[in-house]
Image 1 (cartoon, one colour):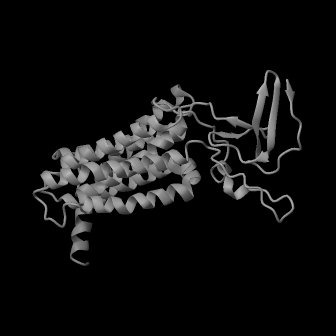
Image 2 (image 1 turned 180 degrees about the horizontal axis):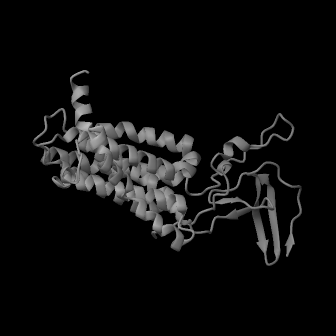
Image 3 (image 1 turned 180 degrees about the vertical axis):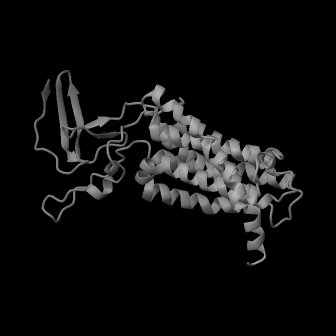
Length: 311
């Protein structure tokens, strides 16, 4: 195969784009930025992203997709009040919004029309921040080679958040107006207003820290799920199994945290060796059991009552 020989590219992410191919002859352009959906290979040629996302990549996308859903549920519960019958419908609507946004995002991504995406493999942290690696051969002129080397893991999250926001604005106000009769007019839309704040925050978080989140999200899930479970059980004054079983809502919260524990464990292990990693899931109930066995020594109800009295 004859290949057009040119000087080597500088920089980590600059590459040569294929201009012409005729049989065994390939002609490449000058060194520069690779088109969207391509990244440089070892020989500094831009190659299309044709691989399937790894399990870890899907788990990362699942984590980023869960963030707005969990925040929706939190603020819906926060602003609905204990006697509001609308919370359940709003929870279901938020789930449908995020699920619909995820399906639409996959359908509009390449290849269009199927629930499948092609991607480039993440090799190192710098793949997420190619704008920091534009070379300056003469220390004056900068060769701009910024492109999405982790295609489409970086931009697909923004697309998903955009569809989440659009579906929320289309569906939620109508639902809340019809069924949130137990809330005052000023409280009905507070969960929606909260989303208008946390979506920009999530967008900035992905834009700035997407690469860091990619490597740290399993540990973030485990730490936050452990902390929130302990806070919830202490705030609900759960000190034994009977307190846990007396209300269905508490069981739902417990099982939700167990799912998050399992998600984090699977993300850390990556299930490379199934027979070795699956037994780790037996650790999922351990934090809750540890809390129940030690609650009698800490007496969270006494601590809460003393805090409320200002002691």
